[in-house]
Image (cartoon, rainbow, N blue to C red; front, side, top):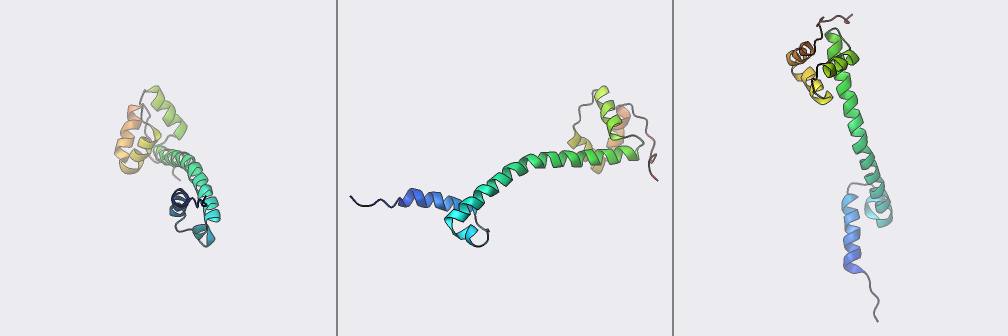
Length: 124
């Protein structure tokens, strides 16, 4: 019985790894063993990165909302508490976008939440 060289299935499996390893330097992009290890590690980093991205964006949104709120004489925690009390259901992503792109709209949201505006109260 002739020896089976596992041609098609093995080649397809290897080519999948090599496609993902394109751009990797030296043997990590050319040799199957190192390429497989590098690709699997890259997939792990990508998985973790998708979780970290959510945290990073939330921190960015909070920083933007906080800066805009401070320029209007309140702070982040008072702003969020007032929004919850007034049943204004805007999330942090939308609030941060308002603070950056439409500051007049952000002021309107704060006044609708019952926050008295004192421009540049904390500037100095």
